[in-house]
Length: 317
Image 1: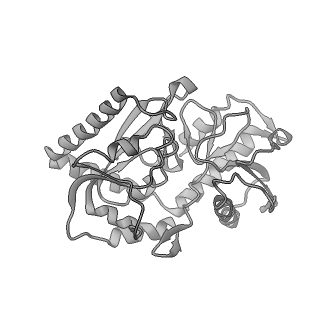
Image 2: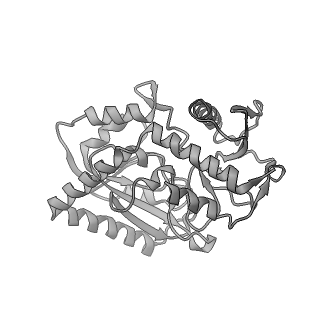
C-alpha cells in the first residue's frame, strides 16, 4: 500500500499547493473540506449532468471515513467523471488514473452502495453472496456482459460482441438484470474498457473463482506510461489474472490491426489455459489468496492513508 500511495504523491514531483490554489469551478470536480472531522461542502453543487448520482455516494464514503478515522484538516477535490483531471496542475482525486500522469486515486463510488436484487449492499456483502453461489453448470467461454460503453470511443466491446464462441460478449441490456454472482456460470471472465480504459466491475470479478482476462488501454501520446490503476491495484497484480495492455488512442476506434492483435491475444490465452488445467487452477488459487484483503475495511484504510499523505506532503497553509 505504501509504495502505491507514494507513487501517487510522487507524481506531483515535490510541488506544494496552497488550499487557495485548489478552489476552482468545474462541474466535474466536487470539493469537500474536512475540518474538525466534519464534512463541509456545497449542498447546491451543480454537478456534471452525466454523473449526478455519484455525489451522494462520495458523501456517504467520506461520512463513513470520518466516523472511522480522525482526519487531519484538509481540502479534497474529487473528479466525478470517468476519466482523470488533466486541465491544471493541482492535486485531484480520481476513480482511476494511468501511470505517468499526475493524480490521486479515490475509492470506486459504488464500494458502499451496490444494487443487487433491488437491495443496496456494500462490497463485503457482494463478496459473501458470490462465495455462496455455486452454479450447476459452467459454460466454457470467455464472458463479458455490459453496455455499449465503448461505442463512442475504441469500440472494443462492440467488436468483440460480434465474435463467435469461445468469446462471449453480451451487450444486450434489455430484460431482467443479471445478478453479478451469476458471472460464475462462465469459466473465463473478460474485463473490457468502457467509456475510459477502466471498468468498475473488476473488483467484483475477483470474487468469482474464475480466470480473469483484463484488457487495459493507455495512450503514450498523452504521456501515459501504462494502464489505468484503481484503488485495489496495490493488492491485486499481474500474477493474479491475465493482464493484456495496449498503447492505443483509446478515445478513437481501434484500427483493424490493433483489434486483430487484441482478439488473437485473448484467444491465445484461452487455449493456453485449456491445454494446461493446472495453470488455470493455480491462477485462480493465487487470486483467491489475495482477495481476502479486498474488504471494505481495507478500502477505507487505504483511503485514510492516501488522504493523510496528500495533506501532509502536497498541501501548505
